[in-house]
Image 1 (tube, one colour):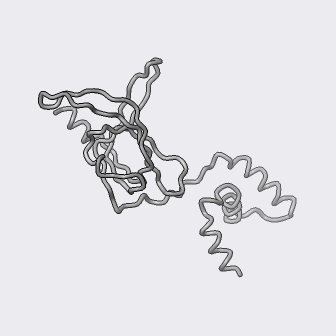
Image 2 (cartoon, one colour):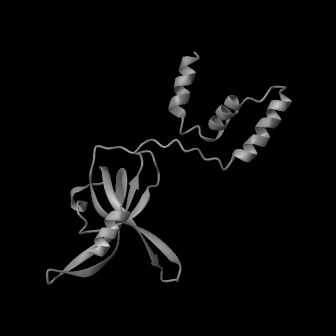
Length: 166
């Protein structure tokens, strides 16, 4: 019972597009005096249909709701993060699903911007502005950075801006 309470306390939630499963292994578990075969799968949950890679989770064939979903369904799930020691002695983590089911919810669009290129961009931007005898401007700098490094993420917005200026 204490382990169950800990799992409820530490449970996290995720919404995404079920992108498929991969068989990992099986084991036997005793339930009510009977041995039951449990299969372990790795599943992928993507944030959007366009996303190439998804977040990986571990799920058992006996997990509540697993038999009700199909690839391509939008799902909501509850999971816990488990730490374990690998065969090579290194520490690892597993995102173990406790329940899963279909949902009408959709994940919120992420607007997180990758800033790993900013220092190189800043140097090039300031140099180009100086060469063109233009005064640097933070709003212009922001737009230039997004157009250079985040164009795919904001292509619909760019399309609207281009239409507005025609």
